Length: 96
Length: 457
Image (cartoon, rainbow over all chains, first blue to last red; front, top):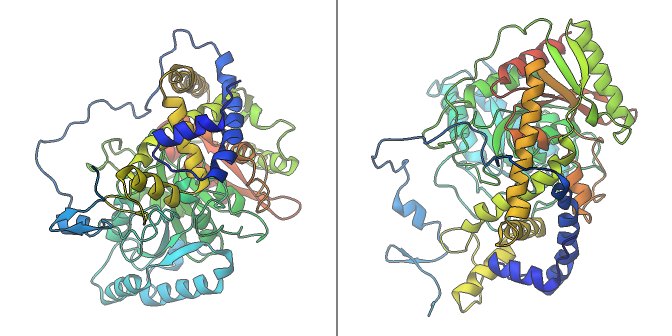
């Protein structure tokens, strides 16, 4: 059975860009171990020669004309959603 | 309960005002997160002036708050989107408005639709329409409850693994999850893209059929929509062959639930249809497949919530990494984080083949089992859930127990099949029980025609 430690959760949280609190780190380690313990049942199933199913639409390569469609949404409406903006740009904290 | 026809030809303002009054009389259920009152009344007056017409002119409805709609924020029941005012409307909402219907509010859900009880809402749970000490089901709990309380004659929901069918069953209303790709998902907050579907709650099957016929159809804004196929049938095909999924009728399943399903089967036989036991052994593993694939897709879909372009941005951070980390920690509820982290794990290097690819192969086996049954049977039947609505708080500390409530609804989702929940009576203690019909892809009209015919049988 796959054991997920507190350090594993910390690493996965970093990969997922979530700054978990100590209490959530403590709680999620056993939760995730239990859930992976449950889904581990699949390892006993013989899937030799079976193709994976990634989607169920039966559609392939849906094409459209190469024309710009703004769907009726304008730049100002989208900028207005940003928590912070300046001079028509989204503003973020200093990166470097 | 009212039907859509009860609202047609009445004053639209009177319809909307009466629905808003019912909302206020039922606040204790916490079924709604916001009202779109000002916009609804404006549209009602436009209907009454004759400026807005259509098959649903003046009929009020409610949408799950993961549908982008004008007039109130679209929160997905999360702190992340608590103040998000949509710059566009979901295609399904646009189509209903084009038919004259009037959206009056946004219904509660598990945050980002992650859950089966509406207890994961960042704004508090919705209570069951029959018993306020019990859960509404989820994730579309609010939409089910507003329909069951007769606040509106129909409400939209989304169903990724049972999120329409399970709350429909828990509250005693009709819930339709169509064939994957039937209804455009444009403007609906994405959860798991390979199984997300849009459907409806209604008080009766004819209304559900009418709403599906309006919202179904290919949409150039959602490349996964199927070419138009949904056409309601005037009459049900006589002598349908129906398979009862025996794995769903074991002694682990609540006795009253089995009794109600068996009661519905007797009615089907009386109506001239054949019902036989069939085996679908793959359902034993469907939940494990679902809880690998869905978290994987969630971890990808929820990566967009970064605190930069829209949504919650944390205060008091100095670096970009802190901004992402703290915004996402504050904006998501624990269940969102649990699923994102499981998704990151099953997709990570070294585990991808053992978990994600393995699950997709077992999914193929499940689909093959369904396909082979549909060579002999027109549709399948069984319960929607193993138990009636459970008590508030009963499963919140045990994620696996909570996930098990989805065990009978996830198989159809993984295979992209149409399925619906139909009220089948109550338990001895008075809790609603639903029966589930599952059909081959694109058989939506046949399921609805059968269910409709049984209402009057």
